[in-house]
Image (cartoon, rainbow, N blue to C red; front, top):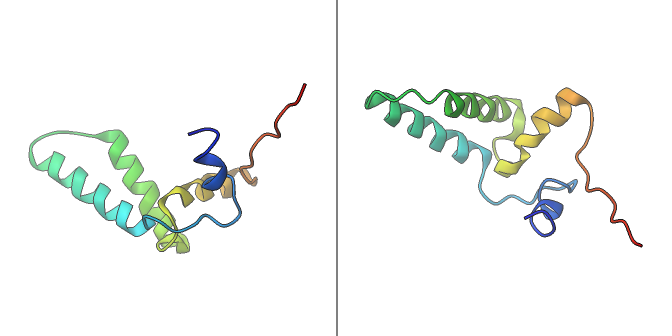
Length: 88
C-alpha cells in the first residue's frame, strides 16, 4: 500500500478516476441509514458521510473517492506528496 498504491493515488496531481466520490457518498448514506433502521448508531460513519457529501458539494463528485484528501489539503493549505527515498 505505502509503496505502490499511495504514490499513484493520493500523492499525484491527477488522481485517476476509479470509484467516484458521489458513489462513495451514496453508499455511505445507504449504510448509515440501514444501520439507523436497525437501531445502530455509527458516529464515525456519519462523519465520513458528511465529509464525502462536503467534497461532492465542492465540485469533487466525479473525482475518485481518494480525492477526499483534497478537503484536508485545502484546510491545511498544503498538497500531499511522497517523502523522497533515502539512499545510503
